[in-house]
Image 1 (cartoon, rainbow, N blue to C red):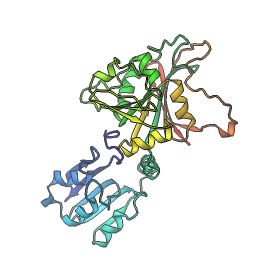
Image 2: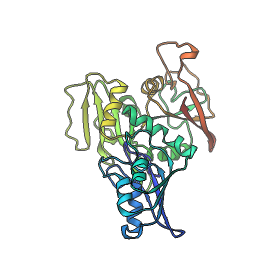
Image 3: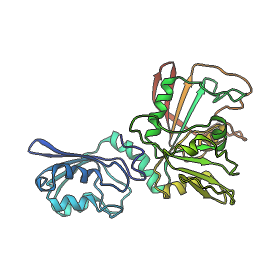
Length: 335
């Protein structure tokens, strides 16, 4: 699984077949590194791929970015046929046409599921904004904590383990200063050879508790977004980004420009509500524990200062559901 490791690039897989045998497989593992097609060619050996067929999940690229065009390398080595499952609608010129002009047989074998899986990437690239997932663990009545701020643990250990996997598939995790001060989280994956996302802290005031363990574990970089022009630190793993206005869209735009393609929001009701009320959330992961907390709902996960008409509220659809021990996991996607 390479989601969350390829930055603003899509996760892609490729297989090369010759004389009925698989001679090479590849995946794009990290932004700036070789694409899946080139990884597969390297495994097979460039001298062995002439006359072969390449199967690839996404149309080979035809442009120069951090790496040369894959279509150009395919042409150069004499691969005879390329079959791909999803067309890259973000490119001004297509690898398909480039390879066909060079005499390669190219087949677009449309796979609806594969194209659906790339829709978020296409939208992200065209809008220059990362794919955003909001994660919430709550009680049946929508509380992230009791009114006295007790939150550990509403959901089960199975949910905790699943959240580590979810973090692994994102480039960065966004949280708020409130969560940092109340929960003192590390926001790591706690798994062997796991990918630790960059931690992003939103703090307009810049009034941070520098003794928090996150600032001292060095497992992943930390970005702090603030409106405090005087905020400084000597910590080597911390980057302070000062904005005149810490609006969600400005923060997301800056993160995308820095190469973050998938971000996960794990925060308290204030930041969670700002994201869910915005048009920038693609996925919403909701873990529900079979508990009713009650109280006045100070930590209700979705709170707004306004009341919207029903036809104006954010709309999601449930695309997957499963039980994790005694808890329910819902994966929702914005309609």
